[in-house]
Length: 328
Image (tube, rainbow, N blue to C red):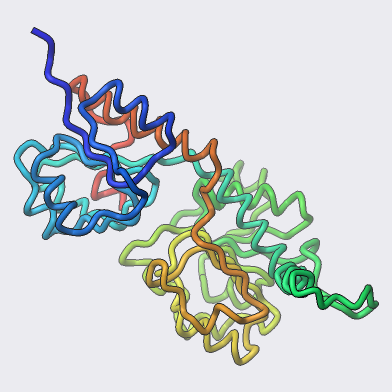
């Protein structure tokens, strides 16, 4: 008698190739439109499915996990970040959690450099002038920005993405500095020509550009708080492609408006899609709609990771990308 296929619920539209493969392997329920599920819809899915495939837009908290049915044994997250999932509560309920690490490293690092250039070279201001048909011709003092070569880059979080940013910044001639929970091995430090700072306060006070590349955890919430932001040089630029909660967005906004920080490139926001409205029209701020991993190749690779995790689980083994509370 053939084995019954796992019931899998996918909470958002995924690339067609990924959805097709999921449908071939499992009894899958796909979204018809690309809107987030409501809390009630998530609860219904978790009550009936064997596997839930959520994304960062789904808040899988203790309350929802408490309503999960006995069948739910795996939450196979489509994405690397898992701060929207209560992993500890899931573990206590006997529900495994997996993610998709590593596949968006290069894409996100590319976006870090794009935001750096966007802010320091005033690309957004130039675009707006051209789109409005207001350009009056070249002038020696128009749109003067600053070059990246020779500048000090302080990387907050030197994991896969942080190291990929460092490699790219090296090619631009930047000096690499970093703060991390653990110091890198000497051979990695040497290859990146990177300087480790044990004190985050001392590092941020001396940098020209800060790149936030650490995950959001209880210990990193508002790691760049108002006090720490005030340590930055007035000429400094902040780029955040990680999680909005790492920066006190209200304090950052106030300082940008006051000219106490030169600029910011933001792909993530403290309150999800609701970035501080005061940031929107600032000429020294480049804002993007969480596009760091938005490449066709990256999104398909994320789907392949999900497929591997679910298929491995279906075969009776632990998913290769299982997330444990101790890892957070």
